[in-house]
Length: 241
Image 1 (spheres, rainbow, N blue to C red):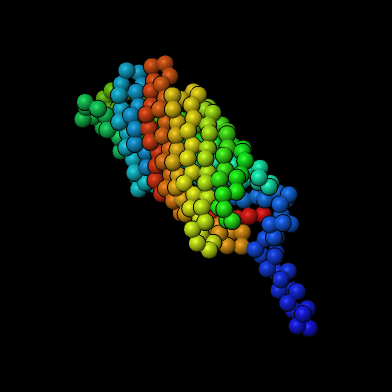
Image 2: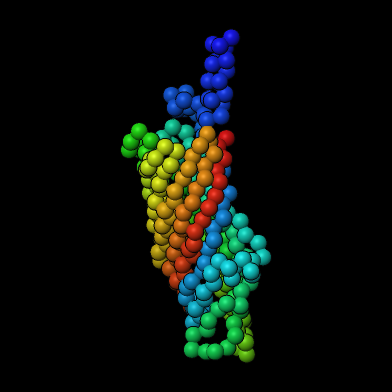
């Protein structure tokens, strides 16, 4: 009876915390991570010979948010890693400054950000890894600026960039990891780069992450240009299946 109980306990441990690495080496592993990105937006926008300086912190965005959502999806098999990240945000904010003018201005913005990448995972320690990925980053940015007594200025940009991503994952304690994700790319934009250092707690397939994400775009297209930074803390929970 005692031996039977021990066998059942071992089987339960495997089902809750995953199969041993030797058994799972060639199996697909999936993870979905919805997260909250407490983003703020700061940047310069040039539309129709007008310069605008927009600045909204997280509190402003929450107060004026129409809808928003973010998620990361991962599908890995052995050393082959695949990554997708999506963010959508629609806001209407009166917190915008117009250079060289005291006129009131309002910003409406609908933004979709998406990244997909694939690559190879290197083992750098017993529980530490380094992912090197290549992929594509897409952004749809639709700022609309209304200036009191002047009029409405609209800009719409669909931006596709190639990118290289480096995603280390260092074991810092039992169940704890540090991952300073870095990516850089170009294409339709002159330069896009991202820095996202995060702390992970991984227990039995459930992963809690805390960190900071800073995404920067430098874009010039015709008579329009944008140099914006979207940044802020993030928190999420990932589920393995």
